[in-house]
Length: 356
Image (cartoon, rainbow, N blue to C red):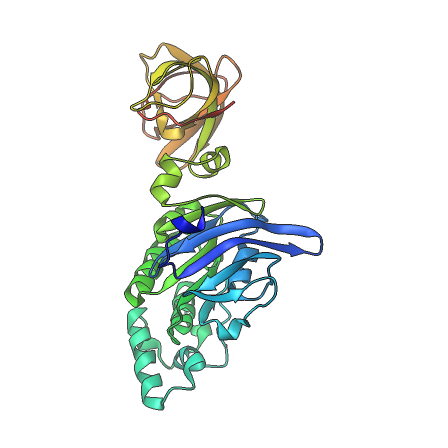
């Protein structure tokens, strides 16, 4: 992205930054922009540099190259790092870290002691109401559930009205059912306060539920900074395609500007794929592109079968040894076991191709 194209209204502007520990580069040449009120997510496997990037934004890590600006003010470059406490950035960590000896009310007040008693009281009541815990003013953290504690941690981070909130895997200690209800609640709280946020996560369902934009990271680099929808339907790289959603790659050959030939037959795209005829490519095959069909002309061998309650997933090996994934309802009349022949067809309108 060149400087002429840059959106000047970005709240957070990360411009080609790199972060190293000793001689090892952990974040490499990363750029992204977060607009006011936007919720972003750094999504990727463990050890890909997400938390290091978050710590650099917070001011806990210095950067080797590039620059970070907040509201058009330079807060980090290789020569200087504005201290974390001067950045007007709120932080929420994985371990929640509420003060156990303080009441819920005093926990929220902690960062706004400089305000008048009346202003402190009003802001605390406003936030308790926002997170739906106004009845817990005099309670202590140990009297709250994990989800309630996390909502209080968010309220405490919001109290001083920061420009940006950073959340480092804040839901990882919570059970799946609680997470499902809490994540949309947190998004709604951030939106009501009109505060921008960046969340670190390795869970794509969490990222999809909370973020306006997702940075898909691997080995210190961002592969794609885009909406959740585009990350899924228009992956920019093979890594993005394989990390988001459940998918496999099927070898193919292009036969016309919208057609390809695969071991499961010929497919036609709704728009030109951009490859010359006779190109050797890999086509992205999502789990929902593969359909069980008793009348299909193609068969695959069941290699694995997993039960998920309402549905099964099958890993299926094709005649050329490549595998694809398919799911079927758990109550379907026809069930398959390892080694069985599974009738399948591909149903794809939009082809996503990569160089072989």
